[in-house]
Length: 126
Image 1 (cartoon, one colour):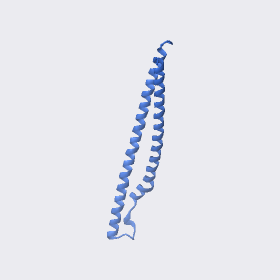
Image 2 (cartoon, rainbow, N blue to C red):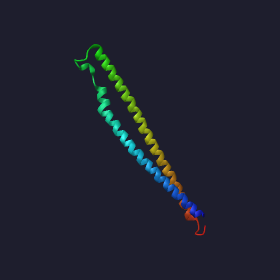
Image 3 (spheres, rainbow, N blue to C red):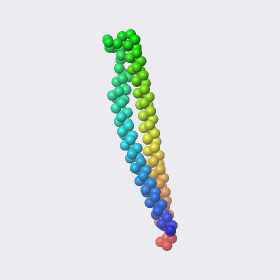
Image 4 (cartoon, rainbow, N blue to C red):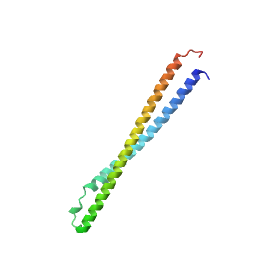
């Protein structure tokens, strides 16, 4: 195969690679959006209301029952908080992966540009 053919083949390979990376980015962005929505829903509808709930205001809870209920509430809030933190870390990891894919796309585009320059510099007979 001539150098021209090799260059064209390399360019096509890099273009397919970029397309694959863009597909991965789309999937990661969709997953990120879904997880962020679920995290926000839990934050607003479960975590914050549960954290703010005051067991001591109810007349039905007295003595041991009140303190036991408060302890359970605190455990729930703590476990939800830990899960929310894990979700936030996961979302950050998705963002880092997306950023890395964009870097890889830029590297491929630079390589394509370099190959196109080389292709343009070759004479018709090379």
